[in-house]
Picture (cartoon, one colour):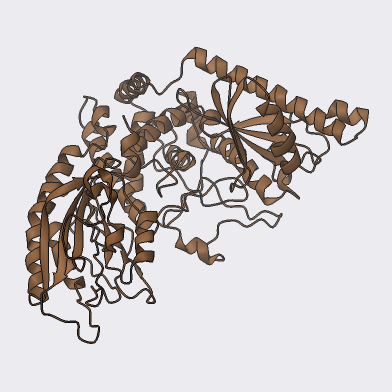
Length: 600
């Protein structure tokens, strides 16, 4: 109760809190149920593992202290300097926040003096020492990364070790990294390496109740992984992003318990008007001249879809990888979470299982596949009608499965000019409108689920996927057609990995090999089944022409309302009548995200 009174007098964050209300008895019961749920889900490490981690960190600290003394001796420094030589280990990330789970990596930072360089010192002598230690395994140095690091296991515990060289001769044991002066005269790699620790410590200073913050963050991290939106690399959010989002909710509801914070998380971020940034504190421009996130001055910052700003100088956008498509997906998941939590508030029964359920879609994927297959005949009829029977279709009756993508199906259709029809002046067949009509029909599916998609493209015969052929071996003569002038079209409905158009190497290779490239449109859908307002297209045209990327407003201000079908502006999309190569068209149906296969 004393902490509630204290939080009524202290303002956390850049705005006044939304509510200062304290917990009810039901909140206490529901929070206890949530903690038990997370415990049963195996999100907490055992006491034995926690002790082993502390021992490993102590051993790592001994190793870097031995390393720095050797470096100082090799540099020919005075005996006094060698005696005082010191390096220090700091932790950051999930371990520092105490939200890590069993077997998680420990993010660590080694801070060394000015004479211990990153090249010859850290990736030289220290790497050599670690490689010779029997307790160190799986040593992987990554010196060329954006933030250089060494990854390894020490006595079975995974460590990611960064390095920061400070302009100091002696590193004190009580070194405080929170002071901005620590960045003075530091190189860019050192600033980025220090940023992890500085941001983590600042988060802990800016939340009103650390224990409530930790429990809520565990819940939201678990939820994000279950729902397939935990992946910075894939354009979603990573650990630090979720920590910042949860911290802001804790500031807005300083006296709430985790069950209420989880509910308010979804309520707030469903209504958040991106790209308004999430800030835990006011941004300090500092006096060291380091660049901070500022869309008023930096044109690149204006392109960020979902700015989540780090609270330590220099303030940066931690979520620059988010795209319009991934933002729409996360907004749909926030809406789903809001609806479930609203039902939980009006019911004493716990529904954590429902909120934290897997993004399973195998059964929905099978129904979606059947729907796409049933519409394939319509594509045949529309193509023939729009080309006045000049372009003939031969659909293959069965789908093909790629073993590496178990929730993906490929359907093939052959296209060729009608016999006796010759190309006049090299004029191509324009099937852009045909494909769009077909896609509109497919997206009329009444049981539309989130992230179902179809993509359309066509490539040269030599780029037909190997899984199409018996035994995965490409024959000398295609088993589809005897005529080498036929055009193969593949309809691929997928519920597995989501491929980002333009970044997929296989598709890029197909583009390089093609004389002409057909339209390939990637469409995401919200939880309510409405199409996204973001469309990426790779257009069919001679390779000398430019492809375009069309984007619409990424914010769905009225989640749940149906959207009109978007118009797609692209260059001429066509099939060349001159080409005698067999080409392929894919229709991809993605019902889940990239790493769904890794979720058990």
